Length: 220
Image 1: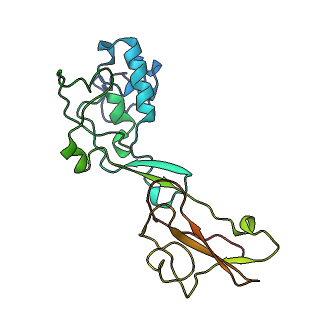
Image 2 (image 1 turned 120 degrees about the vertical axis):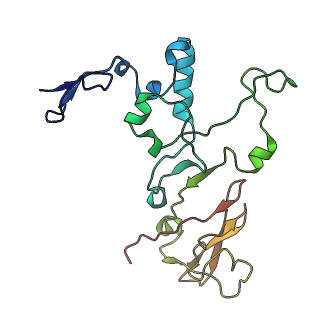
């Protein structure tokens, strides 16, 4: 049995006898999130606890297969960055593959009073250029069998007489990928096979949305 020191050193071990085990480092008593806080031994204990709570809630890079995932809601930071100061745990757990923040230049000074307590003043030009900008991916499942009121089959279809929604609704009645939909705008339509009526469905909510991906799942 070859044991490596907890600081990662080999202690003069030869390459012919690589380490098979490693001593537990004293920081293993802390969680992974707590180990990501640099110079935690120079902070008050409550501040380290606050940092752990904030780090768990931050918007970052939640997954590398985000294009193929169907989470109910996922938050994604557009321009994540690697921290300037990091701990050994950050490299050990490959946290650069899932970055969780952006480096910012902070000026600590007394200005207008709008930066009291936990508040801060952001540079408008930096925000306009994309600082701290993120996306919210939300999956909407449309079940036609649950939407019908009678035992009448319904399918996705688009009215040939409607030209106002050509840029949003595709020829099959489903949303067009890549288009932006504003609240209360039609983004898909349902065709009743018995009456021939086409019922458009409007976007709910208060914010515009971009159609990222459309997938079909059915038995027919």
